Length: 449
Image (tube, rainbow, N blue to C red; front, side, top):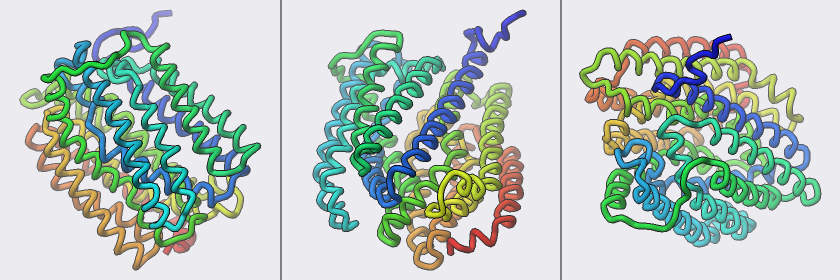
């Protein structure tokens, strides 16, 4: 029996198909393992512990995103992305960033404990931030594999080390049911992951080096990535920042579980888009090339349709899933899943837009889009939580991403990367299907207001 060419071929199409498959496996596997871990830990730990860890993660994720220099993106898109000195310079920059984040977490620990009236954050933040410091030593072989769409081994390393981390975390939580089970388990897990990447991934390792030209390119391109990623932190985390000051730690823990389920479609879409669309845009320029444009638009539509299908399933089944998997303490997570998936439709439609702009080297336009979305969404969330509670925070997500679509279309049109017909059809499909699911569960959603 003949083996399909997409399984063994080395052409761009074959590698893109394999890369897509590996990215889907990685995203589904990662979140499946995270779900399994959450189900076990929910029986060993209290909602208050999940809420406390959610607060700590807000600060850690914020520090990581506000200091993201775009090293991985630079390696994927740069003509020098395979040169040893370029990769070593990127690795050195990455390690320096890890140290800066850890020091910043130590400085933020005391203010964070005061703001949220949680003294435990004074110890949790500095210890948990060690994970970012350790991750800074991760080899650039991961970015190189992404550059060439060779994602198989990276996927299996990440999934196997995550499984080991879960076993360790559950074992610690069994004998020590506190937030420290989550913190220590995370530290051990990232240490194992970085070590496995060095040992199991093909290619040379990295060593400390600094080439002025490479450093200038990384920093010049990365400065707008840094700013854009910082504002994307507000897009992804502003809900927990705002809710953390308005609801109890236990309620925030329940919200975090609902958001974990409800955000799976956007996580899947962003992962596939980030791993596949950027290399496709780089190797198949679409400006002035109708054939490439058709191929890229078809790929984008497939990614978006897949994410919308996942979103529709969760909008229909979210409440039943929570009722099946959790006890009554977590019941409110169900309607959060339903309403969130309606509100994420505009964001799902524009998947891949950032990859198009970055592949064209226009990190400024990407920054402008992210900044506009972040500021608009944060402002709307502040008003929404005061007027409508948790539902207001979720509805702000929809409104902000919808209002920014014209700006995204303007920037994409510069590079002939806007697909108005496909976007309009998929947006209508997503709103109709998810809207029906929302109407079906309306009585439960009213509990969020």
